[in-house]
Image (cartoon, rainbow, N blue to C red):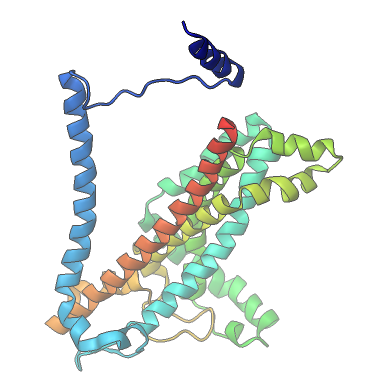
Length: 334
């Protein structure tokens, strides 16, 4: 071995970085490797084609409505199928209200639960509690909807709603007539539905924070609370935000449960107890009862708008989560 080779080998040993040759699936002579590479490549292409096909099909079927309604479709609040006047403004407002309120409530609870499971709870408590919270994601949407109508709705109408109206009635949005179905019921049901997603992703991101981050702050005399607020949460901030946006994506597209509890009325809600529509619920409620082709095209345009919003939200969330996990990998390698 030459002196240069010995020098390179000793440097690799000292730095702990050894050169491992990469094996190309298609560069070798193995038929199995080539078949496997072809299969995974086809699978990736199929996924891309499915996404393109969804956008193409919805865009093609909603083209008459897009031409007829223009950009005014986004802010017009009139939805009158017999007169062929269509505006998705009320549905967008209903979607924003339910999604944002559910996101704030579920994010606060989900991040606190994730911190408890990772930083405080012993293993014999954290494991079963994680399973219990994640089981909420396995409950069918229709069950949440029925629970919201028969259990939560009655509780809001008879107890919680009157108390809120009496206590906070001086604020206009709380001065309403409590009822079984409405914005308030939809927000609570939606919060419970997206809680497992936010909690699970936040837990994984917080657990990925290097132990040296915690040990360094504790070694300086910080308390556990200071360690969490000064070290853990700042490091995992992007990942937690990504978890919240993933929950928002599900909240925006949730259909059946919200259709059962939101009341399904075209109009801008003025109080938290008023019935309303979301983009998903209006599609589910009216698509089987379209009055004319213009009505059908308008509903498909709402579906296209919903698909675009959900797609953008998911892309942003994935990028934020990737930023945290990639930063963790870089830290470990260095």
